[in-house]
Image 1: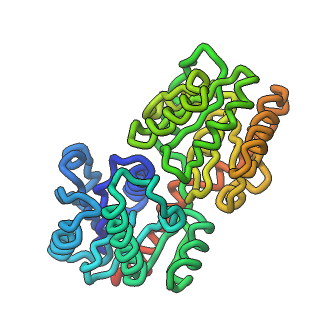
Image 2: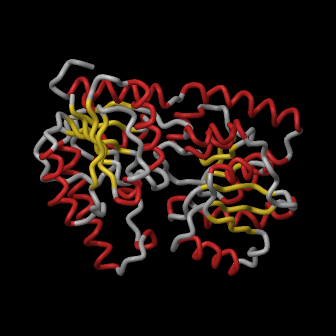
Length: 373
């Protein structure tokens, strides 16, 4: 088979981790089929080809652009691929051949607010229209869809006309480089004070404003809140909001953290707080537990799917309930805390990139014409 993978987002957070780990795992499993990896110039030279079966193509075209819709199909057609894997919604809808689409979440369908953009309102509405059009057509034209949780699969079935038989659940897992870093380095304390931790971006669905409000109560425990995530348009808004509430001294913005810094942050945090209103999977929960840090999480469907009753849940819309559940974890004895962590950590073995890669290879085999796999 000749398989193409659109890896232009490979250096990004979130989807980028998915692409990096999937490709790394497939490299270790498939020695028969031919792969074509499409990269931007920033990543092209760094990407290593494991064998003559692997090829890389320079595709220096921005995602979510008009050029993407026109130029990308031509390059894919030149390579005469049996199947293309698009790991995100940036599908060139004029591509006429078979492709697999990975759907991580449908958050943008639920949070239609101008808060989630830096664009003027007319441009934002135009962008959303384009997104919905490309998403809808991309889903319809795909021969197969992979989702990273059953919750995302159900969201997809609820919002789009799609045959459930062409959807396969391929769970996310811990980043391979993060795991290697966590095993090789002894954690180092970065702050002299006690803190609870949030890891991720600051988009509106992350519900950080309510988390900031909850610090009015939590600060009595002499714990600060450390925020680790990309320095983008939305974090300055959050820090401005904290200052408005008089809580700026209780909130520490760490910025974007690399894997070693994340291991340090998780290892000395009193707990991870994940207050999202919606997620596709929720990798920080897995990362925290790998570092023996107990997550306290919002009561949303995907977290119930992944964690059942292993973790402490709160109503994401109720600041008092959020504070109460954080208090509960902060007040656990050391023995009770460790027992809770060990119990929840058992779930980590249910998710692996090897399993996800094997499931993905089965999709390639099913929908590409060759039976060599």
